[in-house]
Length: 186
Length: 210
Image 1 (tube, helix red, strand yellow):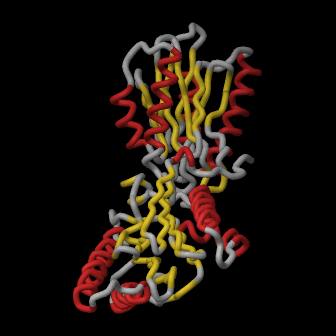
Image 2 (cartoon, chains in turn brown, cyan):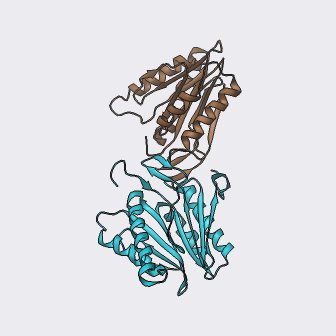
């Protein structure tokens, strides 16, 4: 997880969620790109964030794009966040003894616009928090920032600000994270 | 480096110009990926017009600089005049070479004295001593060899030298994960030492879009 760098977080607010990441791609301490995408849209109301080994970030984002498109064709409806989380969890556990080096985070609104966030480890253990979830190189720093900055029932603008400040401050304390940040608000 | 040991990842530059020298450094100290200090001062005074730029193990370079600072102060007492840059560099070299197996220190010694004017001495990992018109050191230096070779000229003006160092450090910072934060620059001439601090948001930026 320390090879390419990168970190992500997601937070839940009042009828809204945010998910964000930094933009750095490195090879150990060489910075290779400052525009590396780690947060991917799955549906209009559901995003996944993939920190970790960059090749697995790209492979998994394409794999989940395939799986969600097939889901949509078969089910004739968009996938819900909890369903997506379980699908990702099964995919990762399918490689239990040769895992993808990626700890995905899911953030979205379900069909009733209720906020959902989920995190998991690299072999698919799901976490169902009601406040925030963090992953990647700066997760230790992010835990500290989120624990102190987050409070329940934040409006979208406030939630955006909270998530941004947590991400930026944590990124400033990790040499493999930074070079800009992206936050998506739903 | 032992696990948990603190590392001055670092980008360092030192350059002679007409009238003295300019030295510059980033401000990041790391322990693994964690940034222990993001506003470090790696430009350490050794004497009135002698500075050392430190890279490698933070503990090793601090300890060596403290010893050489002691010797430099004693030099003035014993010999009645300030030590030359060559003398200070020789003191650093002696410690770094004799203890080469135990130390992890890349140091640039630079300053102004009345005999040579501005001089820059580089002491890389093995403890060899190299007098050079300009020098770079630290993990970030590898990314600016081309920039420095292309843009260095003898007898630059002070402002040209400051810009050369500022841009060089900024380029290193943009590519090296172990370098970052802000830029500290010091100009040393007959008149004395002038330290400049460039905050992170004012560091020059370059092409970085995909």
